[in-house]
Length: 537
Image (cartoon, rainbow, N blue to C red; front, side, top):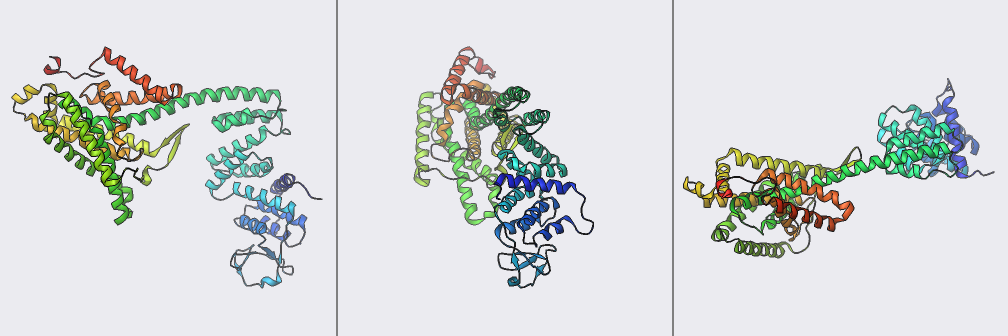
């Protein structure tokens, strides 16, 4: 009589559980006892032997089960020894693990019918739950949790009773609870306790389990599940807001990097620099070139590619900024419209130059190993790339504050910002301060391009995506005020991400723009207005 696969699997694992609870043979270990059953050429003994292998805890149990499933498990009728046949035809003694010189022609293959194959499939999963590697056990527990196959319950309970790793044990308890909830034969109190265990997980998988209880589940179980679902939904809503705040901080750091250079050029020089976005784009292409050179000549340095690209991008874009200021902008001070048109023309020239040199298609910029991957903090999913960009933005901000507060050029920049005429009368060469300021702002934009190359497409149009937002951040925070730029960038980033779930990406951005316009109507100088005689005049 053939048994259904699930019944066979459950039966063999049930037998395994009974065997695990019995005292071991004093003369031979459980692993050797299991091997002996494969030498009788009986399907019933083979079936029982598979169950005993599951509970033996022997390191070779998985290899024996796999060999049995593949038809590579042999036995010697005379000596009652069991051998595993390798892919190259070599024989290994299953009991000792030693290579054997026995003639394979004298051996018989351990046979398997459908009932035994069902036991093999169930045993493979059970052995994963008791594997020596904790990571493999954790993966097996997660697989049981997702599949919710009732046939794995006996093996799971055996593994749970032996588990010592707290993380793996918690995962196994959740997997067991997922099986118990839908088990009609389980005691009602145990099913209610399983609901509480699943509720503690508090994620989307837990919601799916609690929302799909069997129709015949007791009323107490359904009531506990309903209460748990409401609590999980409230908790996930809070975590959802926290996730959006994280996304907002991530977006804010990007806006800060893109706008911080513009804040000092616009604040010191009063120049509406429409080519600022192209400085960001040039920084991204500098990163691309650095990585291409490293791939071709020093692949081992790839993880250092961004570290190498940051100073290079600062120098290259800074020098380009100085050239632009000395050749074009210095002739247009006090003529805002002409400056805007001139810098817009420069932006088009730079875009076309990049298209001519690199082509119009997007360029691939790889992520170093230390910027790849994600990790979870509670129910927050945090990517290493975004986290490092936030850290980089803060470091750039602190470094720029240090330059402005602790260096002579910073002192002169602040003097020119507050009162250009007075600074000139004190002997400060305001024209060279303008050049240095424009170069510094352009260099910072180049470093922003290095960071943005990790999260955006590197193309000739990269800068156009950030120029409007950069001006919005600068005006909202306060022209020329770095703290205002920081607060403005983070505020707009978080507000944007909090509005998106309700209004959508486009309408959310429009609503944010309207809010900023209304705010500027009340505070034309932004959140943190600079003070000085020239400004107050």
